[in-house]
Image (cartoon, rainbow, N blue to C red; front, side):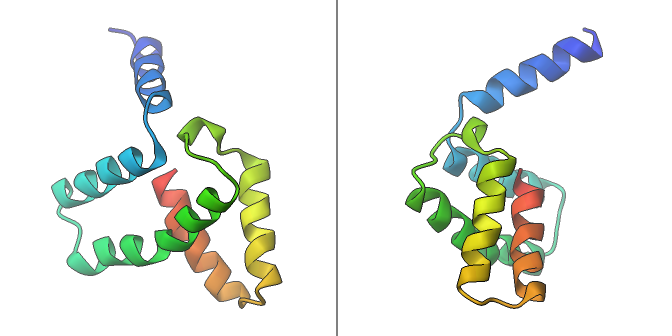
Length: 98
């Protein structure tokens, strides 16, 4: 199978999943990679805010997340007057998931 076909299959599978399903797959992959418990907890704790934001803006599909949604997420955190370091920590977790 060519590399292009593999990529298309992975993308097609991702398009069919909800964000929660992708999160579960992500955490399973982290456990398989034998990441530390602290790293797995880091993702659990820091993705909660991202999931709440996605619920607030009614985004349930992974394919609906684009640059505009991420920019809105950043602005919502800035409106709450979070420090830049905190915002970057939340973004680091979201980036790893996406």
